Length: 122
Image (cartoon, rainbow, N blue to C red; front, top):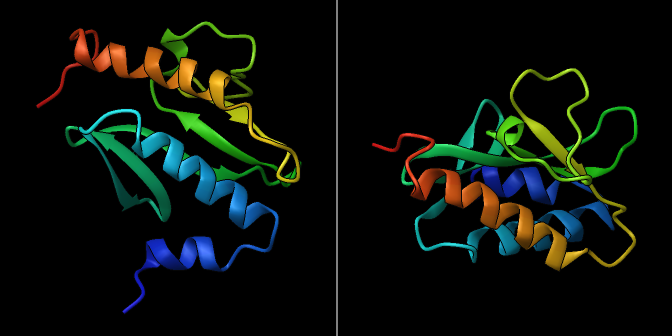
């Protein structure tokens, strides 16, 4: 049976769907402690149970993005704050190749916040 999480991806049109699914794979392979879950009606990824990042589509720009929960602790030119206090997002063009190296560099920085204890886990 399909879950709400499955349906989130299935309800998207191409090329957004493929872009989001590719992003999901990239996120999950960063660390064995990252797991996918459904929270607040969105696909979230947790590090050892602690909210880590999420996927969404920007309402105005209609671009898929990764939201980094502790984004305010990471400085990177591709991460934007908009009107958020804590989270930053990285936007993607759904019909272009994903900048995998950049995504992985940002995710590694984010994982390090949890591993190093800057963000308390469990």
